Image 1 (cartoon, helix red, strand yellow):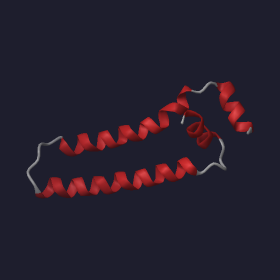
Image 2: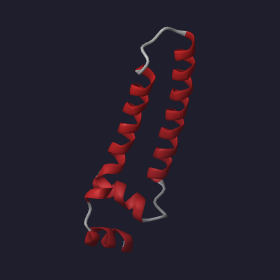
Image 3: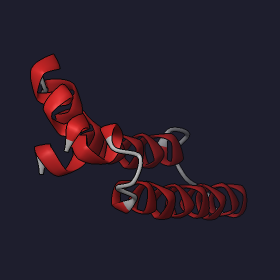
Length: 81
């Protein structure tokens, strides 16, 4: 997973991660709209919507985290492949 994610960031021809992130962002926006409408119509604690959105954003950053664990040498190697 680490190498595949890094390859998507380094190599512009590898588009799989961009598709995953685009779909996830669409889900995140849709979830935000649904949560906003639910919070307007029903009684709910103040931070319910914010906590759910932060959870979804945190899951997105789990996908990005392995990229920052690579060394410069590994990035250069992936860039040349």
